Image 1 (cartoon, rainbow, N blue to C red):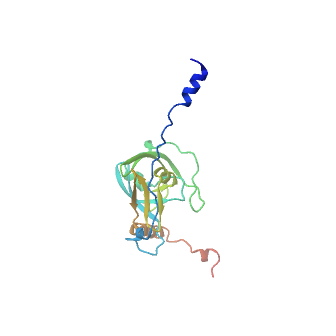
Image 2: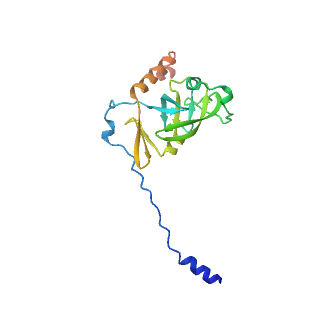
Image 3: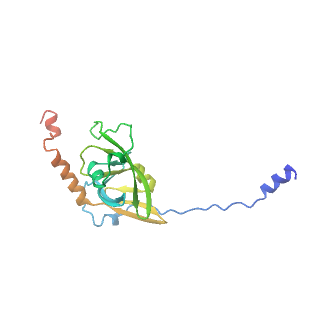
Length: 194
């Protein structure tokens, strides 16, 4: 068979049909505010399934690049130091201090019927939250979150699914932080007062 004939046969192949998968549009409307206390300044605090347990007080933080697990959840899941793997990169807190790391652990996280393995950095600092779900996990889900609407929305099997935030839990966590640091100075007194 000649090269010209092979080339001609390849050109005469039927074009492949392009399969276009239509994804639902993710967004928020005023209807999404129903059931929330408005106006507010609350964080998004949700419940998700981690390691086979429903975990409350999960902070959804679009500003964080790392999934974090705090000591209370680590102990509550009956995890042991030998379950950790080394994590060498430094982690800096909001106030600019380097955080003490215990290591990293991979656990199954289930949202709806989807189960994925998530690497959590285990830290040894106080937090009223059990853990932080950050940008990497939100991006994996194709999710968008809104503190205003107290929801995380994500596409799942052609539908838009929601995870509802809990304003009462968010407010309890805020109070816990304030009570944990009773000797904190106000910014005015720290700068020399008014």
